[in-house]
Length: 71
Image 1: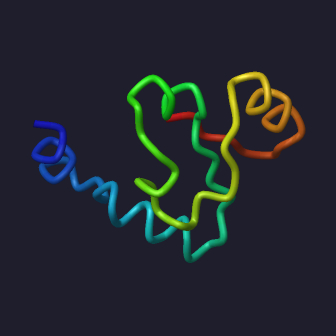
Image 2: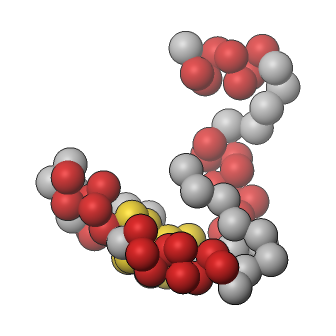
């Protein structure tokens, strides 16, 4: 449903957005709590993840950033 809606509205796919972020050298941070909650392993993620952090770390980093995006 989400993919169809994004396509219908002309929004880039998650894969396209991820590729653009990697190309632009965006710092990608994975939420450690979510990883733990779903029982995922770091090997399950793309290698471009630069940091594994909890919410407190994210908020601390975000405070000093010009732009942040929390998904």
